[in-house]
Length: 135
Ligand code: ZN
Image (tube, rainbow, N blue to C red):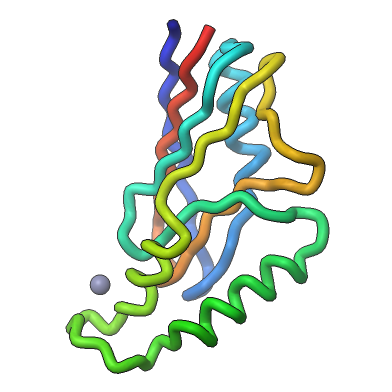
C-alpha cells in the first residue's frame, strides 16, 4: 500500500465562509498516482471544519451558513474568553475530517457533491492535511 501526504494552504477572507476545495484535493489524488484507495481530509484547527455537500447551487451553502449562525450566534452566553466559542461549537458540529473513496485515480463523489473547507473564525491562514492511501 502506498501513502501520499500533502498539505493545502488557504487564506480565508471573512469570518464565516465555505471554500470549495474539491479541485485541489482531486489534483493531490492525481499526483499521488494511487488509483484505488481512500482519501483522508483532515483540518488541524479548532474553529474550522470540513464537509461534503452540494456544489451546484451556492444557495445550499448560504442556507447552511445562515442556519448555523442562527442556531449558534457569535454573541451567545459563553465563558471562553477568546470570544469565539460559536466557532469552536460549529467546528465540532460539522467535524474536522471527511473521507472519500478513490477509484480509477479520481475522487468517487456524487454528481452534486463537493468538498468544502468551513471557516468559522476568519480571516486566517489555514491548512488542510490530505492523506491518500491505496495502490
Ligand atoms: Zn477560542
